[in-house]
Image 1 (cartoon, rainbow, N blue to C red):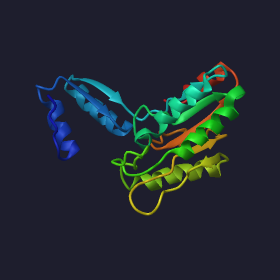
Image 2: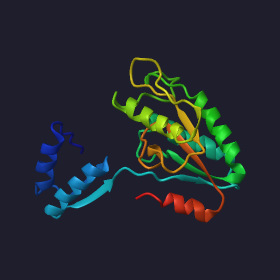
Image 3: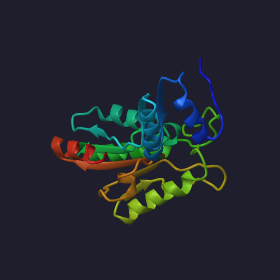
Image 4: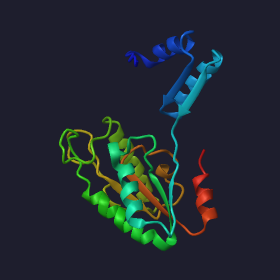
Length: 207
């Protein structure tokens, strides 16, 4: 059975987490809220599982099946407009296949039909709310300003709804905000690496 409780999140959390019938809590969302809920759970000795803002990359090596890798990873990136907690925004691609990966990924991104989720032809629906548009735009603009190459996308679609183009950026330095904070949007950040150790270092760079 699933019970849905609507109301002010803070009031609901304070009541439910402390209630003796609740034995464990789980939360998917931002790190600040996750810290607050974990603290509340600890106060009442409740178990807790948190899935918070992460930036785990997909790593693609020279010997990968490129057609399969690009098709699968692009699908994961653009499903639900990237608003899935396990959608990969960051791709570390070995230099031997880097250009090919970028070209194929861009081709798929350009072919994604964005629109009404009830239209059978639609392959990517809108962002969750109006606030996501300027947040995403700031991230893309910041990356380009710092030297990233914008291959496709990078702007809002029309002036109605919360539709944004599937976006692909490459040759990114480490300092853009998109490389350090989870974009949670239809954006792909593609970065080359040479040795396995370098990919591991970058994959583990962020908390």
